[in-house]
Amino acid sequence: MPDAKNTVVSQEKFDEMIQELEHLKTVRRTEIAKNLEYARSLGDLSENAEYQEARDLQAAAEERIKKLEELVKYTKIITDGKKKSEVGFGSKVSIKKEGSSDVHEYTIVGSEEADMRVKKLSHVSPLGAALMGKKKGDIFAFNTPNGKQTYTIEKVA
Image (cartoon, rainbow, N blue to C red):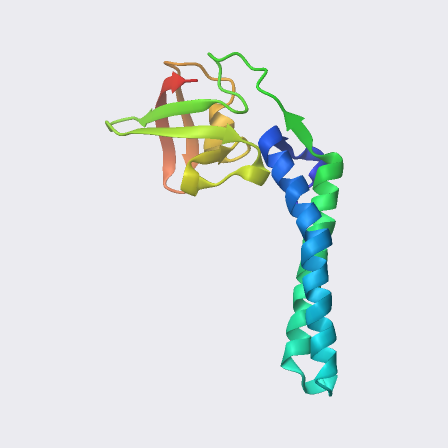
């Protein structure tokens, strides 16, 4: 598990974590307890697939609860206090790779909420770290497995 004391998230993500934690502690624990009780009623636990599956689900849920409790306790909530002209948490950044006309837009977020499917880029990823503190028009480079990549910042919002 990443060090929760160094985790930063938006208020939106923090609220999602609180909601998930409450759901796991109330609804999910109750569902799993009912499944365990039903599986026990089937008899011999040593060869009872339903019982083993319910125990595995219980272990996974308890591990997630433990992780979320740690994150909620220590995570720092980042508010949009940065200048709009400089890349920071919550910034929407448009960049263009050197030699290409394609513009890519990303939102800079904490590592807990990074999701490339929706263009949310972690501030500690190689690209995210290279973007932090930059301004519109800046040219920057960072190393990738395919070598050094150079980009220009087209827009910061």
